[in-house]
Image 1: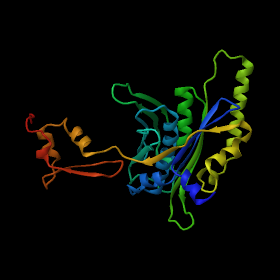
Image 2: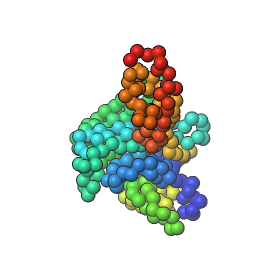
Image 3: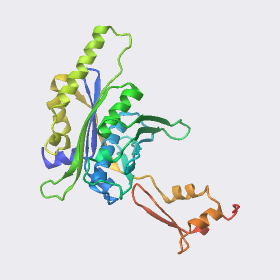
Length: 313
């Protein structure tokens, strides 16, 4: 694959279906978007790995849903890594990129930097939240943390909450391409068995189960370097893995890093506080400050401009 082809597939999610079975899927490649997520913070490598996995999962899951606004993934645990949060924002127009962001909260003193990353979450839950915008009821699905990875948690979530057999094969880590500095890259394949007719004959149901088993066996043959690239493009990867299943690809979805924070939103959040409360938030320099946990943006505001003069203290 040429450098131009490599760049064309970076930061994309490619939808596909296997025409010889009731299976759909996604191939994702993240490099610049993931690097932009992680460079905003000085996370230890063990935390970076968890965010990389969660971000990759979010990009693939978000693209499977007819999303009007935002899909969020939250992992909460009682271990040193307390929270991993990601957001996937649907494209604002046809052909526009989706936007993704992520951050983690952790106890640095308790963190074992030599341990397997997933072990640092402990016991807790895996949640998917879907917000379709104003006047729409948000959806939230929760499942206990299970398995030995975040991708295993996602598979359990879809099996239990959505009754959709789902499989992920992921690879992520720091990579060095010729002539380029070391940077994070991530890639993965998502398979999902679409719901069949509940009244279908047993023979048809058995055939669907056989198709699912075969597709999983084929996915088991994928190599980590094939998932990340850069030498194998997503269409070539699908052809190698599933050529007998007649893979059909659709238009790829570009994914960029993007944050929705703004000073206007910070001011709106502060509007619930009284003048007395704002006074406790004011710094010795006479300003009110706020930081975005996702992108690191730092907002500095004059309390006199926040409009709290008429509120009771």
